[in-house]
Structure formats: C-alpha cells, structure tokens
Amino acid sequence: MGLAERHSRTVDLTYWRGRIPVNYVYTTGRAGEKFFQRVVNGKFAAAECTSCGVVYLPARIYCERCFARIEDNYVEVLPQGRVHTFTVCHRKLDGSDSDEPVLIAMVKIDDTDGGLVHCLGEVKPEEVYIGMPVEAVFEPKKQRKGSILDIRYFKPKK
Ligand SMILES: [Zn+2]
Image 1 (cartoon, rainbow, N blue to C red):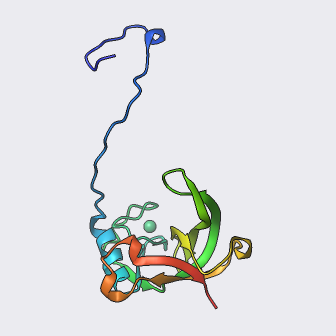
Image 2: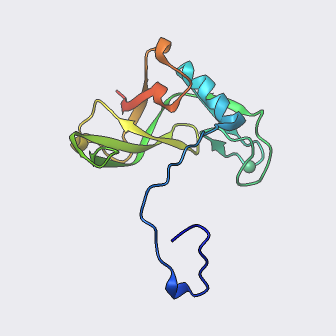
Image 3: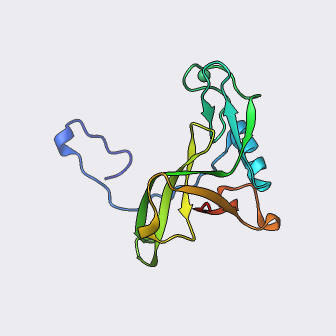
C-alpha cells in the first residue's frame, strides 16, 4: 500500500509492516529547566500553588487544578520520598533478558503532591515495599548535566 492509496471501504484496510524512524527532542520547558537546574546541585524544585495548596514535583508553571500561575512559586524540597509503587524488570529495554533484575519505582517526594519514576538501587527486590523511605543518589557533581540521569537511583533511607 502506498501513501497516496485511497480506501473508501474500511473493510479494505490493510497494514504496512516496517519501521518508521522517529527523531525527537524533548524540551523540559521553563519549569522543567528550574527543576533540572536544582538537580545539578543535588536538590529538587517543586512549584506550590498558593491558591489551592497543591505542590507540584516536577515543577509546573500553571496549576492543573485551579489554573493559577505558579511559575514564581518554586520551593526547594529534599530529594527524598517514599516508594508509591514499584515493579521488578527482568528484561532490558531491547527486550533481551537482564542478568540482574532492575527495580523501577514511582517515588512520591516528601512535602509535595508529586513524584518521579526512577530506578531503585542498593536494595533487593524482596526488600522493597510500598511506603519504603528512599533518598536520591546523585552522580558525582562534575558528571551532572542537568538531566534525570543525574539521579543515579533512589536508595533506602536509613
Ligand atoms: Zn491550584
């Protein structure tokens, strides 16, 4: 089927097997930029809505609940939280088997209404539980680039 081919009956639809190369650039936006500027320094930036009290992490420029502008209401929060949910992955991103299971968690960040999806480290799958207190482990400061990968993983907080 060519791109210019027309169908007038849905029962005649076919499919095309192949690969479509997709290139994209993810932009973090103004609030995301503030968040990653703090990550470089080993901290997290949230945005607080003074109208309804929601604290967004990652930061936003508008409140999703009441539409108030919150771009100037950045607050610094500690890079720590609790495991909200998690999964154990036994396959790599390419679908091949993984030698070691990888723990992926949604971490609800303390003093915010938000959180981050990231890896857990320094913990075995059978030791993880919902509500487990964790803290971010950052890459060495000289290696940080203002990326989510500046956070190596979250580890259990002692
Ligand atoms: Zn609000």
